[in-house]
Image (cartoon, rainbow, N blue to C red; front, side, top):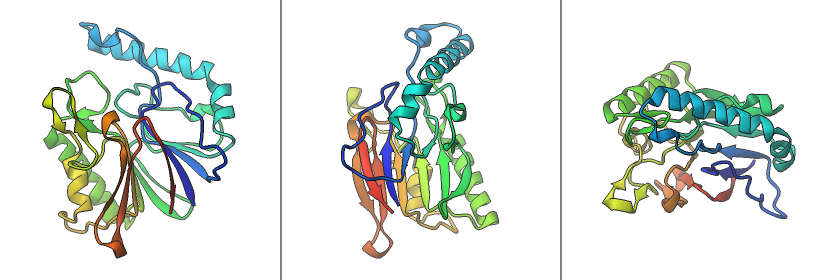
Length: 231
Protein backbone atom coordinates (compact mmCIF):
# COMPACT_ATOMS: atom_id res chain seq x y z
CA UNK A 1 0.00 0.00 0.00
CA UNK A 2 1.36 3.42 -1.00
CA UNK A 3 0.52 6.35 1.27
CA UNK A 4 0.81 10.00 0.31
CA UNK A 5 1.48 11.77 3.61
CA UNK A 6 0.91 15.49 4.11
CA UNK A 7 0.74 17.74 7.15
CA UNK A 8 0.38 21.39 8.11
CA UNK A 9 -0.99 22.65 4.80
CA UNK A 10 -3.02 25.37 6.59
CA UNK A 11 -5.64 25.92 3.90
CA UNK A 12 -3.45 25.19 0.88
CA UNK A 13 -3.97 22.30 -1.53
CA UNK A 14 -0.41 21.52 -2.66
CA UNK A 15 0.10 19.85 -6.04
CA UNK A 16 0.23 16.10 -5.53
CA UNK A 17 3.25 14.20 -6.76
CA UNK A 18 3.14 14.15 -10.54
CA UNK A 19 3.41 10.74 -12.14
CA UNK A 20 3.40 8.85 -8.83
CA UNK A 21 0.89 6.13 -8.03
CA UNK A 22 -0.57 6.01 -4.51
CA UNK A 23 -3.51 4.37 -2.78
CA UNK A 24 -4.59 6.91 -0.20
CA UNK A 25 -3.83 10.32 1.29
CA UNK A 26 -3.12 10.75 4.99
CA UNK A 27 -3.08 14.23 6.53
CA UNK A 28 -1.68 14.51 10.06
CA UNK A 29 -3.29 17.79 11.04
CA UNK A 30 -3.41 21.56 10.54
CA UNK A 31 -5.33 21.19 7.32
CA UNK A 32 -7.46 24.31 7.76
CA UNK A 33 -6.67 28.04 7.62
CA UNK A 34 -7.00 30.21 10.71
CA UNK A 35 -9.07 33.32 11.25
CA UNK A 36 -6.70 36.28 11.33
CA UNK A 37 -6.60 38.01 14.71
CA UNK A 38 -8.62 35.39 16.57
CA UNK A 39 -5.83 34.56 19.01
CA UNK A 40 -5.57 38.22 20.06
CA UNK A 41 -9.06 38.17 21.53
CA UNK A 42 -9.30 38.49 25.29
CA UNK A 43 -12.24 36.08 25.12
CA UNK A 44 -10.59 32.87 23.99
CA UNK A 45 -13.74 30.72 24.08
CA UNK A 46 -15.44 33.19 21.74
CA UNK A 47 -12.36 33.35 19.52
CA UNK A 48 -12.23 29.56 19.27
CA UNK A 49 -15.90 29.41 18.25
CA UNK A 50 -15.36 32.17 15.68
CA UNK A 51 -12.40 30.23 14.31
CA UNK A 52 -14.45 27.04 14.10
CA UNK A 53 -17.26 28.86 12.27
CA UNK A 54 -14.75 30.42 9.87
CA UNK A 55 -13.18 27.03 9.13
CA UNK A 56 -16.56 25.42 8.51
CA UNK A 57 -17.49 28.18 6.06
CA UNK A 58 -14.11 27.90 4.30
CA UNK A 59 -14.25 24.11 4.04
CA UNK A 60 -17.83 24.17 2.75
CA UNK A 61 -16.78 26.61 0.03
CA UNK A 62 -13.77 24.44 -0.86
CA UNK A 63 -15.63 21.12 -1.01
CA UNK A 64 -15.54 20.81 -4.80
CA UNK A 65 -11.91 21.96 -5.01
CA UNK A 66 -10.93 19.47 -2.31
CA UNK A 67 -12.54 16.55 -4.12
CA UNK A 68 -10.87 17.44 -7.41
CA UNK A 69 -7.54 17.81 -5.59
CA UNK A 70 -7.63 14.39 -3.92
CA UNK A 71 -8.21 12.65 -7.25
CA UNK A 72 -10.81 10.26 -5.87
CA UNK A 73 -8.39 8.77 -3.34
CA UNK A 74 -9.42 7.92 0.24
CA UNK A 75 -8.48 10.73 2.62
CA UNK A 76 -7.63 9.77 6.22
CA UNK A 77 -6.95 12.56 8.66
CA UNK A 78 -6.57 13.79 12.19
CA UNK A 79 -7.20 17.38 13.26
CA UNK A 80 -4.20 19.39 14.45
CA UNK A 81 -3.87 22.13 17.03
CA UNK A 82 -4.83 24.79 14.44
CA UNK A 83 -7.96 22.86 13.44
CA UNK A 84 -10.88 23.99 15.59
CA UNK A 85 -13.26 22.22 13.23
CA UNK A 86 -12.58 18.51 13.54
CA UNK A 87 -15.33 16.81 11.52
CA UNK A 88 -14.58 17.06 7.81
CA UNK A 89 -16.38 13.88 6.79
CA UNK A 90 -19.14 15.89 5.05
CA UNK A 91 -16.62 16.53 2.26
CA UNK A 92 -17.47 13.22 0.64
CA UNK A 93 -17.15 9.47 0.68
CA UNK A 94 -13.91 7.95 1.93
CA UNK A 95 -13.08 10.99 4.05
CA UNK A 96 -12.20 9.24 7.30
CA UNK A 97 -11.73 10.94 10.67
CA UNK A 98 -9.12 9.34 12.96
CA UNK A 99 -8.89 12.24 15.40
CA UNK A 100 -8.08 10.60 18.75
CA UNK A 101 -9.57 7.27 17.78
CA UNK A 102 -8.60 3.83 16.51
CA UNK A 103 -9.83 1.89 13.54
CA UNK A 104 -8.93 -0.97 11.23
CA UNK A 105 -8.47 -0.05 7.59
CA UNK A 106 -7.00 -2.06 4.71
CA UNK A 107 -6.19 -4.85 7.14
CA UNK A 108 -4.06 -2.60 9.37
CA UNK A 109 -4.69 -1.09 12.81
CA UNK A 110 -4.56 2.71 12.74
CA UNK A 111 -4.49 5.08 15.71
CA UNK A 112 -4.84 8.87 15.68
CA UNK A 113 -3.51 11.19 18.40
CA UNK A 114 -4.06 14.94 17.99
CA UNK A 115 -2.81 16.19 21.36
CA UNK A 116 0.26 18.42 21.56
CA UNK A 117 2.37 19.86 24.34
CA UNK A 118 1.07 23.04 25.92
CA UNK A 119 1.95 26.21 24.00
CA UNK A 120 -0.05 28.97 25.67
CA UNK A 121 -3.53 27.54 25.97
CA UNK A 122 -5.34 28.98 22.95
CA UNK A 123 -4.87 26.31 20.30
CA UNK A 124 -6.83 23.08 20.12
CA UNK A 125 -5.64 19.86 21.79
CA UNK A 126 -2.96 21.56 23.95
CA UNK A 127 -2.20 19.62 27.13
CA UNK A 128 0.29 19.76 29.98
CA UNK A 129 2.79 16.90 30.13
CA UNK A 130 1.06 15.05 32.96
CA UNK A 131 -2.23 15.12 31.04
CA UNK A 132 -0.54 13.89 27.86
CA UNK A 133 0.84 10.95 29.82
CA UNK A 134 -2.63 10.08 31.13
CA UNK A 135 -4.21 10.33 27.69
CA UNK A 136 -1.59 8.15 26.04
CA UNK A 137 -1.69 5.59 28.85
CA UNK A 138 -5.46 5.31 28.38
CA UNK A 139 -4.98 4.62 24.68
CA UNK A 140 -2.34 2.00 25.45
CA UNK A 141 -4.69 0.31 27.90
CA UNK A 142 -7.36 0.13 25.21
CA UNK A 143 -4.86 -1.41 22.76
CA UNK A 144 -3.96 -4.04 25.35
CA UNK A 145 -7.57 -4.86 26.21
CA UNK A 146 -8.66 -5.07 22.57
CA UNK A 147 -5.41 -6.58 21.25
CA UNK A 148 -5.44 -3.75 18.70
CA UNK A 149 -1.89 -2.42 18.81
CA UNK A 150 -1.50 0.06 15.95
CA UNK A 151 0.46 -0.70 12.82
CA UNK A 152 0.27 2.98 11.90
CA UNK A 153 0.12 5.89 14.34
CA UNK A 154 -0.99 9.28 13.06
CA UNK A 155 0.12 11.90 15.57
CA UNK A 156 0.02 15.62 14.96
CA UNK A 157 3.16 16.12 17.05
CA UNK A 158 6.30 14.05 16.46
CA UNK A 159 7.91 11.91 19.16
CA UNK A 160 10.11 13.84 21.56
CA UNK A 161 13.62 14.27 20.22
CA UNK A 162 12.81 13.17 16.68
CA UNK A 163 12.18 15.85 14.03
CA UNK A 164 10.69 18.10 16.71
CA UNK A 165 13.12 21.03 17.10
CA UNK A 166 11.66 24.54 17.20
CA UNK A 167 14.49 26.83 16.19
CA UNK A 168 13.06 30.19 17.19
CA UNK A 169 13.86 31.64 20.61
CA UNK A 170 15.84 28.57 21.61
CA UNK A 171 12.69 26.55 22.29
CA UNK A 172 14.21 23.18 21.34
CA UNK A 173 12.37 19.84 21.37
CA UNK A 174 8.60 19.99 21.73
CA UNK A 175 7.61 16.47 20.67
CA UNK A 176 5.58 13.99 22.70
CA UNK A 177 7.42 12.12 25.44
CA UNK A 178 4.71 9.43 25.78
CA UNK A 179 4.94 8.63 22.08
CA UNK A 180 8.74 8.45 22.21
CA UNK A 181 8.61 6.17 25.25
CA UNK A 182 6.11 3.89 23.53
CA UNK A 183 8.27 3.62 20.42
CA UNK A 184 11.32 2.84 22.57
CA UNK A 185 9.45 0.09 24.46
CA UNK A 186 9.44 1.81 27.86
CA UNK A 187 5.82 0.89 28.62
CA UNK A 188 4.81 -2.66 29.54
CA UNK A 189 3.11 -4.29 26.55
CA UNK A 190 4.62 -1.85 24.04
CA UNK A 191 4.57 -3.12 20.47
CA UNK A 192 6.33 -1.22 17.73
CA UNK A 193 4.21 0.23 14.93
CA UNK A 194 5.46 0.06 11.38
CA UNK A 195 4.89 3.71 10.65
CA UNK A 196 4.42 7.01 12.50
CA UNK A 197 2.94 9.88 10.47
CA UNK A 198 3.29 13.31 12.08
CA UNK A 199 3.94 17.02 11.47
CA UNK A 200 3.42 20.12 13.64
CA UNK A 201 6.98 21.54 13.60
CA UNK A 202 7.42 23.16 10.20
CA UNK A 203 11.18 23.60 10.31
CA UNK A 204 11.94 20.00 11.32
CA UNK A 205 10.25 17.95 8.59
CA UNK A 206 11.95 14.81 7.30
CA UNK A 207 12.01 11.02 7.54
CA UNK A 208 13.82 9.08 10.26
CA UNK A 209 14.21 5.39 11.08
CA UNK A 210 14.07 4.12 14.64
CA UNK A 211 15.12 0.72 15.94
CA UNK A 212 16.87 -2.34 14.59
CA UNK A 213 16.49 -3.13 10.90
CA UNK A 214 14.30 -6.19 11.43
CA UNK A 215 11.84 -4.17 13.52
CA UNK A 216 12.45 -0.69 12.17
CA UNK A 217 9.90 2.10 12.62
CA UNK A 218 9.55 4.70 9.87
CA UNK A 219 8.82 8.18 11.20
CA UNK A 220 7.50 10.57 8.57
CA UNK A 221 7.34 14.20 9.69
CA UNK A 222 5.69 15.92 6.74
CA UNK A 223 4.93 19.43 8.02
CA UNK A 224 4.50 21.60 4.85
CA UNK A 225 5.77 18.66 2.77
CA UNK A 226 4.55 15.60 0.85
CA UNK A 227 6.06 12.18 1.52
CA UNK A 228 5.36 9.02 -0.46
CA UNK A 229 5.63 5.91 1.69
CA UNK A 230 5.02 2.23 1.08
CA UNK A 231 3.95 -0.25 3.73
